Amino acid sequence: MSGRPAIGLLARMRALPLFAESPISGPYRVARLVLLVGGVAICVVGAIILLNDVAPKRYPGLAVWLVVAVLLHDAVLAPLLVAAGLGLLRARDRLRISARAAAVVQGAVVVAGVLTAVGIPGLLANQRGSANPTIATTPYLLSLAVIWTLAVVAIAVALVVPRLSARRARRK
Image (cartoon, rainbow, N blue to C red):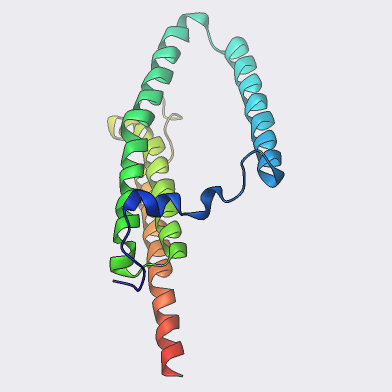
């Protein structure tokens, strides 16, 4: 173990510099305002498209889809990502992974996981086939293989390059 004193996981999490600056001051305020305006604009565009292009008889199905999507996010995806992040935080010292490498690992897993969740319906539609040949034309299996390959490469680079650099520095 490193020379740091052993402290609990929650204490280590509270010590992270994530909230070093108040979220209502400086650049955080500007970022929050930009995100708020962008989110409202996207909601307005979505509402216009919904009202103009979707038949009202399809609204209940869309409502069910939205509720299921929120439940899957809150009950499955978010807890899995939190558990993975806490596991990585706990294993970081033991495995001698830098904070930067851990962030790359977390980011790669989140991006690949979300893209997998988005791509699974298309993959299933490709496997099932369709009467309309213009639907689900993307090779989702290939796309998912490429996404996960890139994620694994990014993770490998983030974990290996710092160790190689440290080894070279020790040789000199």
